Length: 433
Image 1 (spheres, one colour):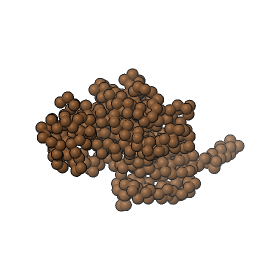
Image 2 (image 1 turned 45 degrees about the vertical axis):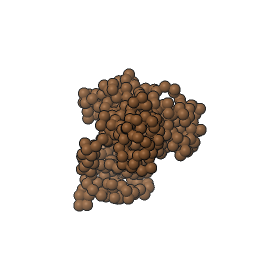
Image 3 (image 1 turned 90 degrees about the vertical axis):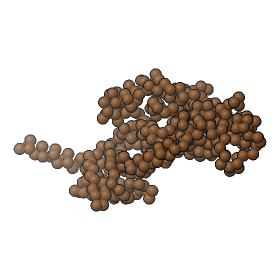
Image 4 (image 1 turned 180 degrees about the vertical axis):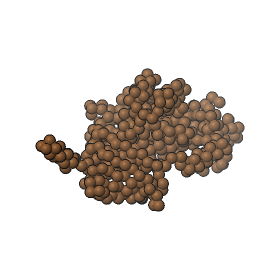
């Protein structure tokens, strides 16, 4: 009898004193093609998601869970999420409802604590095989087949959303300053004849490393350029660096990815290779990219020379490392560490629009030089044709292409310097033409 009573006491004690999981904070990150909802929780939680229609909504039931703060609401620009609401269920459980603007697919996973955050429950809402994307790609292919295309440079602002990157002495996050530098670069590149820049990360949201590469491929990029701001335990360390993929480092990195099933930077996104066999994982991380790597080294060297004109460089030669974001075998890729955000002086420079603009112009010098000499086939720069715009003169065009006015005149068999808007002229590849 005493044994039975003891067991009853233990049962009720474990039920009464079982720890309830609490939701301490909720963050919503809206990206162009997905929305991420992050719940900061006190510990691992049992949960179940259900998709409902009429109207569209996703319901998540959390066992033995309570909430300490009011739910944050999505912004009006969010493509998928209309509102979030919650209610207690079965006295001890919590139900959270995501009111949706359209039907979506979803993915949910839990993350263990790291240096910045505790336990987290993440819900991703997204749509796959977007008809809009298909239409855009079809339009781009149709347009490209009709005329010579621009050189496309994909600018990837590192980190974002739940992944803030390095933090400066005054609390400045890497994700924010590199987004501003990237925007400066896009503006400058888009003013360049025959070149067009596309942003991989357009706002403050998380994006996995593989998705960044895939985005560049969707844009049919001729160059992938990832922009970062370095950090080190010694605040005196400073200067810019430019990286390309290391064959040796990349090979060991690939083995590490397959062995550990995830890249360290992608841990925040719950990205895993668990559902891929070793052969497919090897293909995804294939490093047989000799031509792309040679082009990457050439571009990186020219960009580094440009950066030397605007400030101190940490390494005077191009460096190589096994960065996963540089592993696209078909797109030349470089990574720029613009400065050490951990250095107080360089942190202040990164916050200066003037310095960011100077840095973007210095990077542009390297890009302009490379694509002037090695423009991809089928591009405007490869055809070396220039359509004269309003206000342009023969001398300004010659200066733009870094050739003499006399050479440009002779190459086009022009009698004088008079040109008209809309006129097409041919650009010689060198002043010796």
